[in-house]
Structures are given as C-alpha cells and as structure tokens.
Length: 117
Image (cartoon, rainbow, N blue to C red):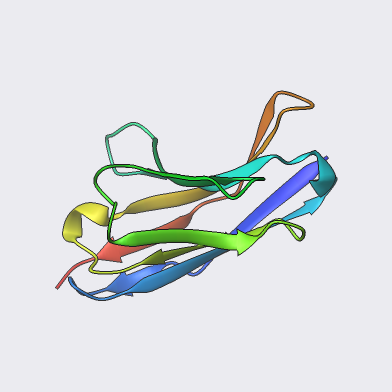
C-alpha cells in the first residue's frame, strides 16, 4: 500500500510564489510517476504537472513557464514551485502517485491554494 501526503498550500497575492511538497510512503518502489492535479470550485480535477521515473515532465498549458515540478525519485518526493501566481490558480491541489504494477493511482488529501488580493 502507498500513502501520499502533501503540504505547503496557503493564501498569497497575485504575482507571488508558493511551493508545494509531497511525499509517498509505504511500497514506494511500485510508484512510476508522481505529480499534481488541481480542482477549482465547480470544476473538474485537472492535471497540473507530472514527473516520471526517467525524469520526463509534463505540464498543463496554463502553467507552463510559471510552474516547475521537481523531486527526489529514489525517495518519491516531489515539489511544485509555483511562480507568478494568478487568481485562476486558486484550487485544491492534489498530489498523486501512480503505480504501473497495480494500475492504481494513490491520492493525497489535498491542499488549498488561494490567490487573492
């Protein structure tokens, strides 16, 4: 079994930065990719960014050039550095870990990010 815990959300003003952290524990050797989704009120959960075992990354168009995903693959820890935040980035951010072995996605509990003046 795998557990995923994220942290680092909060309230910031437009243009400011925030860094989210996420760590997987348990049978982390089964995890092949980690990343972040977000869900704004009344909207579907959407991918923000992910990073795979080989280091390849993927970003939503809306966050390219502003957000950077990085981490420690051996420890299954990932970070999401969010710069130049906008009000439309306001959402609950969910970290996930994906296991190809079990074809299963493990989710964190979510952390609120609010961008408002």
